[in-house]
Length: 240
Ligand code: BJW
Image (cartoon, rainbow, N blue to C red; front, side, top):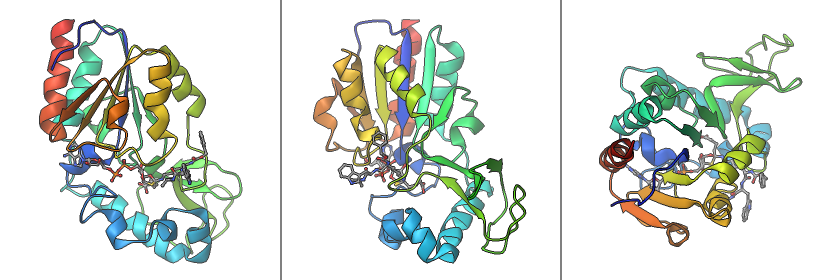
């Protein structure tokens, strides 16, 4: 494993695989979240309209787990935070994850493209508010005071991901793109490697296994994130 240049601007895309070793379930692996739930029931605006109680329960349970003592950032999150601290150039983490483990590890420059578990949104105004509590269909919205007007601040299927202008700009400007622990099946994140490649950016994929987009990368590093990300970060720090 080596790269023969010193990058100045790194964009790192993370997916559920980076948080798997912190005890948070991925979506599509065996025993993943989508084995227990139909995707469109819990992660679409139509599902929420049909059964808001079910959707609130799904996100309440995930929020409770995130806030419990059992979940902590792992070595991969910590290595990325150390990289941001030591690296002379620019590091941007674009995460599809709705957990806060990059923040807890100490990373600063993070774009949550699929929203955040610890935020809720007023359905009428779209205003986003911090939230650590369960939401129910009877919770009054602190913004408009109406009951039943709160939803998780999460990007569901068919909705436009957050920060896309900023992400596209960063993908056009970076000289190293690293994708960690994502299956590459959900768009637009799945096409970030193609955007980066079209600007001749060196692209690295880190995953437990080959994905359906592996062939688009210049380098594929296989293994658990806690080992592979730590080793890759060390390589980048040694180049400094
Ligand atoms: C490890 C590991 C370890 C495990 N170490 N690795 C037909 C064609 C193309 C597109 C579409 C289509 N029909 C519809 C669409 C669009 C749709 C889409 O992509 N659908 C696909 C399913 C086909 N996308 C959308 O609707 C998005 N919006 C949109 O496209 O707007 C229009 C637009 C167009 C162009 C530009 C801009 C906008 C919105 C997508 C919203 C996704 N939301 C979810 C749920 C909400 C968040 C939540 O509840 O948490 O986001 S779905 C779910 O999938 C979640 C994730 O962020 C996302 C990605 O999953 P991820 O992270 O890749 O997890 P897994 O489980 O799939 O993979 C884990 C990986 O880790 C595996 O590879 C393992 O091997 C690996 N791994 N342990 C290293 N220890």
